[in-house]
Length: 274
Image (tube, rainbow, N blue to C red; front, side, top):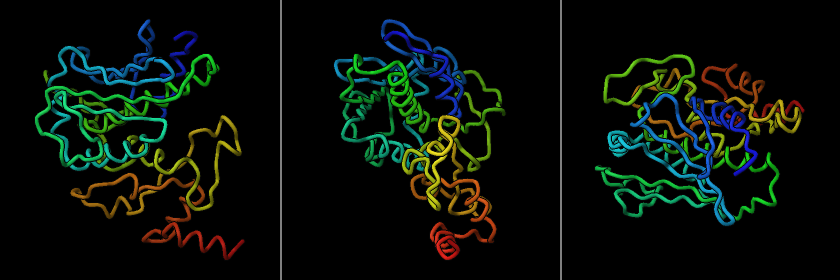
């Protein structure tokens, strides 16, 4: 791959996932690496150009056995998030390959996964892609898309609560943990919601990129259908069904009532006053 702006790739993935990453390029492709996992015990995502495809692949470090074992004992909430992201990724032109301990696994059948993980293969294959037909910007957007999607998928099974500002230390041999409120504004849940529903407001269908161009790209609020204040610690969020994208105006109007209005209720109010 040539003429790739790794700074742009890094910035775009940080914006969409809330995870600090670095990006570098060599003869194999573009490596996207979370910086909050220690070298040697973490992983990177390798995005490479194949024959008529672009592939993103989970690339574990030499001493990442503990990380992989940790992914294998993920709780129900993490598996639901993984399934939600997987459903949004898999399409006619994108294949998701998953192997655990060298055996092909259905990424959507989380209940059938083995508990003991010794090795993991995760790979996204986007087809057809012919590099000669792509502009530099189009190629970078594809790298951001497939690389960011696989990064989010991998992180969904790790015990990380993402927050850009607040970090805590880690004991030797343990995964780095970034602390935040369990439910409030999780960037991975937000990303899974947007991957499912898109950036258009579910109430008024306002599209920030369509109206404001590049400055509005990627902007939208995410609304909890069940208010955070009503969620107890045992509740498991499904980003595909419990979260919806809404514009700031509609978001404010939803919360003018207690409990908040539903999406359909606010739609009806808007239709009456058009």
